Length: 86
Image (cartoon, rainbow, N blue to C red):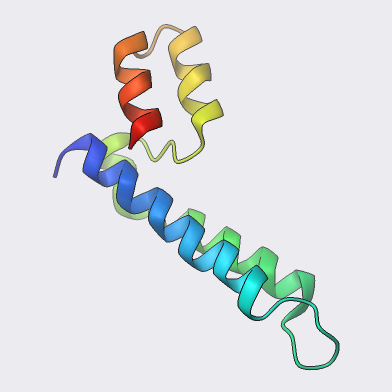
């Protein structure tokens, strides 16, 4: 699997589970999962992707992580742009 496909899958998973939990089952009284449930959805999606795609692409998912890696000299600006697009 290529790095860009792995990053796309990771970002898709984070948005699907994290934002999906916030939109579908947010804090709407007694029936929602509340802030703790939304936090768990984001956290579990992120940790799952860290284990799943971490060895392939580093599991940046967040563009700020890619920017930090580029500023630290661990990736080229061209590769950072590719990560951002993915």
